[in-house]
Structures are given as C-alpha cells and as structure tokens.
Amino acid sequence: MTKTPISLIIDDGAPINLYYFHDLARRHELLVPVKQVMRFGEICGRYGVRGKFSVVPMPACMGRIDQELSHCPQEHLVRFLDAVRQRVAPHFSITPEILTHFCAYDLRRQQFTRIMEDEYIGRCDAEEIADYVSLAIEILCNVNLEPDGVTSPWMTGSDNEQNYAQGIGMAFRRTLGRDRSFYFLHHRPELMAPKVMCHSAETGTVISIPRTIPDLFWPGNTPGNDQTVLQEIRQGIDNALSADGKSGEIPQQLEEGNPIVLVTHWTSLFSDGRFYGLDGFECLIERIHRHLGGQIEWLTFREFAELA
Image (tube, rainbow, N blue to C red; front, side):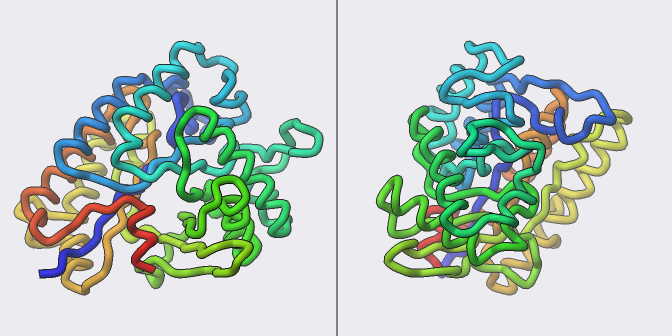
C-alpha cells in the first residue's frame, strides 16, 4: 500500500515570543524557554514527525541571531540555537521566515524601516527579493542552520507571487547553489499539493507547498480564561482527528488521497508559558500515530518538494 505523505509546519520559531509584538493590546511573555525546544524535539523524535521549522533571522527587529538580540540574554539565544541544531534540524527542513517577521529591513541603508515585510515584498522585483532572501539565508548559515526554503510571514508574496517565487529561487541558486527550493505561503483549500511555480537556469525549480490543516493550537496565544482556551484546543484536535480515529479532517483527506500538511506556530505551542498548545500537539501526534501510523509517511519539506 502506498502511504500518504504527511508533514508538519512550525512557524515563528525564535528564542522570543513574536506574538509579544503582534498583539500589543495584551500582555505576553517575551522569552520562550529552551525547554520548549527540547520537549518538542523529544515528541517529534518519539513519533517520527518530520516537516519544516522556521527560524526568524532578525526577529521583530531586535537584532541578528548570528550576533545578538536586544532584550534577549546572549546565553538564552545561544542555548536556543544549540537546541534547534541538535533536536530539531535533524528531522526538519529549516527555513528563514523572511528576515524579521515585522518591519522590513532596508539593505542599502542597513536599517529597519516602518514598512511591514508583507507590504515591502509586495513592491519588490525579483532581484530585490533575491537580495532580501539571500541575507536571511546568510544569517541562518552563520549559525549552522542551512535552510532549504522560505516561509512567508503572514501572506507575504501573495500579491507579487511571480517575483516572489523567482526571487527565492535566485537567492538559493546564488548562495547555496541549489537547483530546487520551496516556500510556504498558501492556506487556500483548493491548493492541496506541492506545485512548481517557476523553473529556469536562473532560479532552479521553485515549489509552493501549502498547508491543508489549520493551526489547531492558535487559541493558546490568547491570555485569559484557561478553561476556554483548553476547550477550544481540545475541540480543534477532535475536529481534526476524533479520539477513536474514525472521523475528522485528517481521515477525510486521507480518504480523498490528499497529502496532509499540518501547521502550527511556535507561539501557539508556547501559550505564554502555559504550554497548552504543546500539550495539545502531543495529544494530536499520539492519536495520528496510534490510528493512522500505518497509512502515512512523515516527510521533511525538502522531501515533500520532490513530489512536485
């Protein structure tokens, strides 16, 4: 029997909580403890989970992870990167989530702007995007986390996708000599499988890989009533895969013969130090393993890109 490919997307990976900057109306914890990386890696290792893990090179304009970050102790940054290299990178394709997942960085002036990255990339041509992505690749390589593709903050590139895809391919050809790269951007249900977006000598082959299952643990980002948050997470898990494994969106996609791409966010798993999302993630992965393990094959995004 041919097994259905399955993969996991982790967005917003950083030693800090990016939601601290994206939800200014409420109080959030800033530092994500290294124990989250360790526990996440242990869960993925136990169940054979593979996928794509983002590391933001200049998170929230606080500095560069290959140098230092403001308001983040250097020891914390170093330990985070060590843990990602040891516990995550062996099982996941690493990507930058562009440069900052916040305000764009002006390469010529070497300073942060007041324009958010999604708006900035929407104005760029392929050459400018290639330069921007090349810096992100360089920073990750400097910390020994060589990337295989790119993750889009928000919907970055959706309004300029031809240039975006070409720029990504050009960046990987120039910096790492790659003939194949990928990006994660789309959440549209009609895009259920990896798709070649451009192919040329200058860009190599560039594949768009969409997600098919939404972030079930996003309620963990919301401070407040813990019981409400837990109930929403449990309901999301049940909707994706029931406790008996007989119903849910994941079995439905399996029945339809679609690849399965789960997505969640580093901030969702953190849940402001409550780890409700991480607990829920472990519950879901255990269910998938118990009920569907014989029908699926976990792939990294680099492996997933080979299917296009």
